[in-house]
Length: 193
Image (cartoon, rainbow, N blue to C red):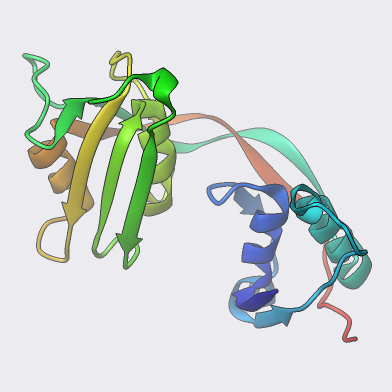
């Protein structure tokens, strides 16, 4: 069940990537909101919902798309300090990576305010989480190996960019790089039941 979502969000869910850039979406696919209620055959495994959602998009929206790499604006996450010191809210993980102790919790109002708290995460995993809020894909260029615990909090008074430097000792550098984008070849408004 999907409630009150733009079609672009449904497409992202079907392709399993919240940070996947979508090219060629019509304005209505970004603005109009939809409710989707779909039931799979009895005994359908939860792991099959993404392929089923793709099929639903193909059937009901005549959706066709392909993935290709394009040069796009990105951010590289790097160390902010010349002495490579980490900020006060970024520490080497307190558990071994093999213990499966990693987790990430987020609460946010988008780029305006929010928190990200994580344990046992690599900087690359943090970058993937950060991509949702930085409005670009974020790639690790820190050279930091291993896993880390961290807490990041930003607000309308302290931007996410400032918070990264002050709290974690990291910064985002603008760059361009090849990333996967989903190019919509054709899509129509969904057909009703």
